[in-house]
Image 1 (cartoon, rainbow, N blue to C red):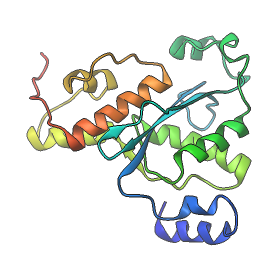
Image 2: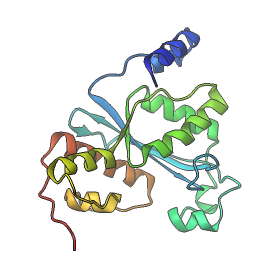
Image 3: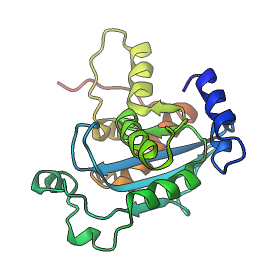
Image 4: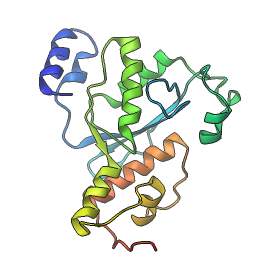
Length: 208
């Protein structure tokens, strides 16, 4: 969100609990986030689960993660279940969409959001936030696959790289990554972010 739009929303929401969302974010705090949804199209996808974990300095706060399951949306069908393996039965105690987005905002505040394909998640969350609260999320975005790609391009300018989260984690020697689980994806993205910004990049060996 550009500074002018951020200032406008801060002024419009002055006196409400949401005004601080549009203030300047702390420079050393981030939130790694992932959503499981019912579609690959962010214009129609409905949220099934949201998970997030805070990053403060060079630490991932795994002891206090955020994770919610929503009520099963009508668009939850066998095709989406094949991807994330979350069924209607798994969501029988799910919360409402409005409860989920309100709780998420309380957790993330105005911290920048780190993630893998984070723009996809943000577009869906913006749609839901506008629907229930009337404004978009102001949080800046950090895409870990872009960070990884840019770093490798500086080493191998003409290289071609596998940018799947599995391949990135394998190269960065991040163990025990289990895909298609929102919390594990959020933790993996956080580990990738810290490895790329605070750690040392292992040598890249092209795959034949």
